[in-house]
Length: 472
Image (tube, rainbow, N blue to C red; front, side, top):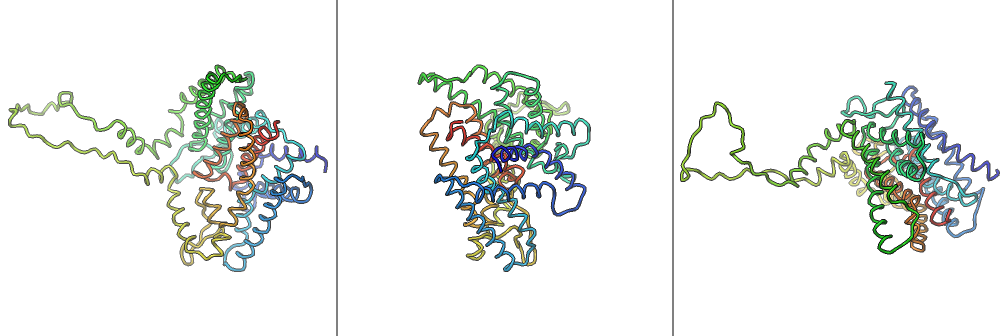
């Protein structure tokens, strides 16, 4: 298979991501099948990446040898895990296989794409990633304005918002959050044109009107981190008199305008209403805590028209103790609310893991967990790092994060050797995207363990690797 065909095949698969998610949504809503076109296509791609990394192309560098050994370890582990589950547990092996494919998609595809990138450097531009996001936000916008959209939340739950024609609001929201930094930077780096303007407007609208907190916080985080970066580097380069190609005035102006448009729409958006419904009581407590106890002035207190005026001599006045205002913010309640009570589920799974056998501690509890005698569940914690650890144990977790850790170490070493890369907006954008992805994975899940989302983290990592390590 030629290099050109391999690259075109890879690009075609990436371009088809919004289409696969649309087809998955329609199949999931209308056809009762255990497999969807998205699962099948992504499973085949994962299998191809596995074979490619092990047998089709074998670069000789030390990092690539470590990568292949990790991939072999993952293959051996998966076979061992499924064999142990099949022979020792009374559970659905199909459910376990689907769980393994979804969860190990990220490390296998990351390794395969990394080795493909070594053979023929992959070109992942901000423009390319912006168009991918435009595919998602465009569908959400069209579905919403035509009134044919699906709700972000199930009917029996409170929550406003639109997910367009897509299926899982959590996954689509995570994709939007991860790709948002590239759309913002793309409009800063390039001249204004109709496509760039439409892309940022649709990005803002989708972040607000999906109604979920992930794309909202992703947008706020992207703008906030970028603004802090601009201020810090502007001061640093002036003090150190370091020449830079960054146009701080243009960047600041673009960020401020984007922030103003975002804020002007925020208070009328579904995400604002959802946040106030779910977290309004916490916000009020925080505001009262900051303001402190407020003393009420009797002279300014409104008087009841029927109230009788009684003059009391000073010596007859009794000093009553001021009522205490309960401004205590319970940390557990705060964390539980922000994480949608995922900590309670995590604690339950943690206790099951602590009481499990040595073998289960090593290979994991699996994707179907017995929470009570005769009662099992495949419900996840929705905190990816914990789901990976409890479901695949110590061995599975080490193998899972092995490739990611290797690449991060190589990238960080390169940054230490050439810190000037930190003045490159492309590098910072990739770092913001990866940071948001990892943060969302731990707080809301559906990133590392969701093939539809994790592929975009992989693109950010490979793009950062090419910029910092390869200098492309």
